[in-house]
Structure formats: C-alpha cells, structure tokens
Length: 137
Image (cartoon, rainbow, N blue to C red; front, side, top):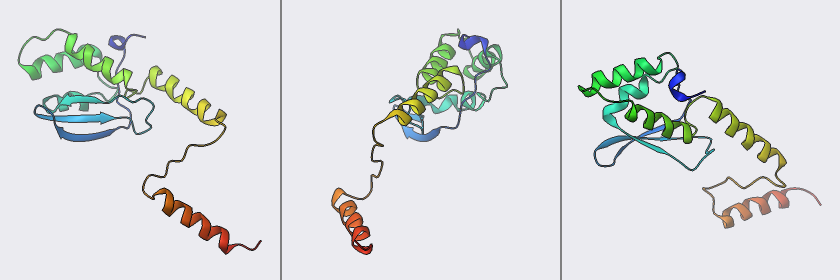
C-alpha cells in the first residue's frame, strides 16, 4: 500500500532536539534496524505530532499547507513520509518486515554480539575473572 493511501503513524522512536542549519529534530530508530536517521526542521514538529495514525494523507497535506502559509505540493510530505519509511520510523509493513528479518537473523546467529559499551575490555575481563574465582573448581 502506498504511503499516500494510509494513515501514517510514527512508532516509538528516539527524538532529540539538535541545531543543524537551525533548530531541528533528529529522529532515530531505538531498535537500530537501519543505520538511517531523519532530520526534520523544528517548524514541522506539529506535522510529526499529527503522525498518530488518525489523520489521512489529505488531512496531513492540508495541515502542512496551512502551517506553511502557502500552497505546497505533495512533494514535501511525500519526501518526509518516504524518509521516515526508509528509516523504519513508521509503524507500517516496511517496519514489520525489517523487524521480523532482524528477529530471524538474531535467532539464527551463531553467537550474540557483545552490546556492552561502557566497560572497557579490560574491565569486562576483570569482572569475568572475578566471577570465575568466586566459584569452586
């Protein structure tokens, strides 16, 4: 189904305020399904808030046109929705397929990748050695 035929909804994501050529929102996938992120000018924050699965594409376009104060073609909204879709930030079939593929890859992996980032390798080794010393042979 095409994005303009849906009621787009953002899924739970990470949103951070940044300054990139002016105030903006940096949107990222907390599951890290993709390496992409999306930068959205802060002026379009209300449009992001409207991506709650209730508004149709036409309603979103009308809100964007009203907000910008000029008649805007669908290109801006299409570009935003496409970027959000490609970064797996919308709660839709694209995200569900990527999530299912990630689960399969995780379950089929020969080992689980180390996700500890704070302790250094030496600290981690010391901790493990401490555990091993605490148990009887």
